[in-house]
Image (cartoon, rainbow, N blue to C red):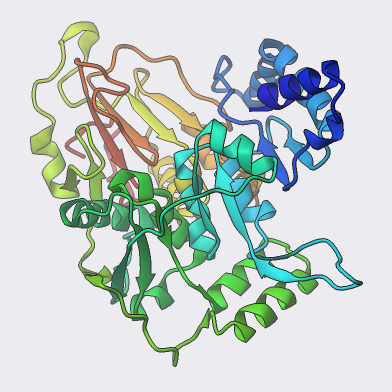
Length: 436
């Protein structure tokens, strides 16, 4: 996209046109992510060494981005090593309510919105911000001030009731929700959540659910603004004047939902009782092909070769990653507590298991450090951006937001995705297999 803008500007300059016309009319935030490769693992300095290697590999690209930031007014580049775009948008970049440039000495307030070049841009819907993923051509046109034309999509309401049971996380909610919405059919539609169950979901939980919108085919998965939205803005360090603006504007527009607010009416409404959600694993190849945790052992059948001493169902990858999970404090603390209890019981990770921890932002890393849980993760090989080399993989367990058929195990393995909040390991067990 930036290459297109720069090429267009140079072409205009050659033809004698006004180069200033080829400049973003909207604020553009470019987050450099998904470029890190784990070359160094299992050491305290793994993150720094991997980042240095990343800068070496992609130096030319990053120098271009720095040059483009100086060349294109309104472009802000978030450098590598800071975090994943969706999580940074949630924690730092989004405003919920924003203001335009002064007109006649006044600023006009309006709802924040975002167009992203990634399908999981919908994660920001958890903060009551309208946003979805678009293609590069659409994004370029919008940046240059061209309107995005689309047919107003149908809206499907999802009324949530009840509360999540102890030990059940938002990621567990996303999986049955994907099944429900896929069966109903929401492709090209907007999903909007309502009901008393929202009171028990904090913004990180909502963001986890909204992030999964592409997996159930919806254009957006929107959560309305309420007191939890304002509390999250304060928790993440937004200036108080920004929070006050958001509260005042939302209240004036009758868009700040409270306990006494009437529920919206939809042409189509589905129900989801959060108290019925159980611990689940996605897979073996699609997010909506979910399994209840007790059903996992039977699913780990003979799907791989028996070389190198591995058994069918052996776990060979344990990854704590993705913006979906690492943006959720409960999920991160749960992972840390499992690690702490495992270390206390003298458990170790088998040498064939590749472990890795790649948080989506520095806030997630700081949470583990400040709670004193990171040392336990380190003991088990979950150093920041660290891991272990692994052998061919008959079965993989990851803590990520999605899976595709055959990825990453190919035809030799099955892929299981789960929220990492299992019960403390049992004493005397030093290995890990699917039957656990």
